[in-house]
Amino acid sequence: MLAPRHLNSVRQRLEAREASLSPFAAKSAEARREGPETPSTVRTEFQRDRDRIIHSKAFRRLKHKTQVFVAPTGDHFVTRLTHTLEVAQVARTIARGLNLNEDLTEAIGLGHDLGHTPFGHAGESAMGELLPEGFRHNEQSLRVVEKLENGGQGLNLTWQVREGILKHSKTRESVLAEGWGTASTAEGQIVKLADSIAYLNHDIADAIRAGLLRDQDLPRSTREVLGGSPSERINTLVLDIIEASWPVTGEDGRANGEVPRIGMSERAAAATDELRDYMFENIYEWEGQQAEAARARQVVHFLFDYYTSDPEALATEFTLLDDPLVRRVADYIAGMTDLYALRKADELGLRLAQPASRW
Image (cartoon, rainbow, N blue to C red; front, side, top):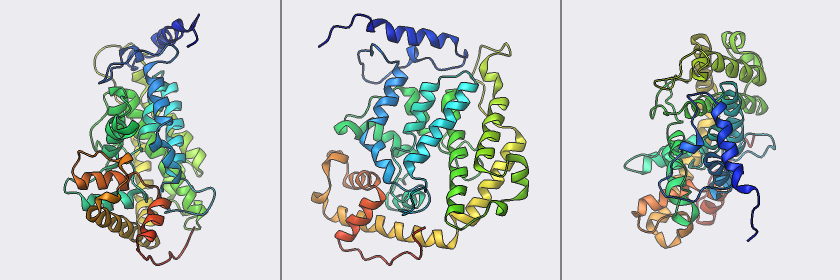
């Protein structure tokens, strides 16, 4: 092994730079893992988490997982991977504007959807029908990094990243809804909002690309508040969140107590919720999309029934042998890409009707 001459000071220099961040920013020197590890010489703890996520198998599979449109053939439709990269980019911009920890924000953003099923939320819903305890992709994402990756050893991520992954989800009620709680770090709270900003805008772009929507079809009130194009809406919301969350910078003299909440102005939140409602009514719950969701549900149910009746067919690399059978089957199917799930179901004898459109 090469003997480093100068490397031992690199991590300390990076950690020292974090002293200039907001007093409410998470500091990598304070990060803790469940399993002890020797610190890196050239990376902070949050940088190591980011790198572990990027090099994980679950992260690679995101490139062939659905965002909204199931297994689209077009080159420019959003996949779960491109969605993840957009979330990380939006979140980093907000964190930078608020002088928070970009490395932590990026790690949470890159890891937030690692446990998503094939076929997007249709697959998640189908899996939830099959498990007595239900199924939530944020909980599965946490399970992936804690237990399933690295040959069943997990990635031993810091608790700040793991908490942000678990608490990024929200309910249908509002973009500001609590859902599974609120992350204790401002960085985790940023990712929750960045997730909504990213998916709303790229889902609109995909719907337009598929010929299901036109820019002028969106509610006029939302266009007046947020803008008429994806870039305008993203810019508006990023700036609004930074402005509304300014106390978290600590520059107003407040430096003690609880971390100020990351939020949005009432006007921007109301417009965003109106846009979400429009997308649910016209795209997410559209008749053609529901037909695609029905096919996805059929595939998930078929695979679940097959593997619970023939557990020897399970690939042990993506399950834990000591877990109950239904949990192992759920882990295996949740890790599948859309194309693999469709191909495997076809090989095992499921005959699906061809979809009316391939987008």
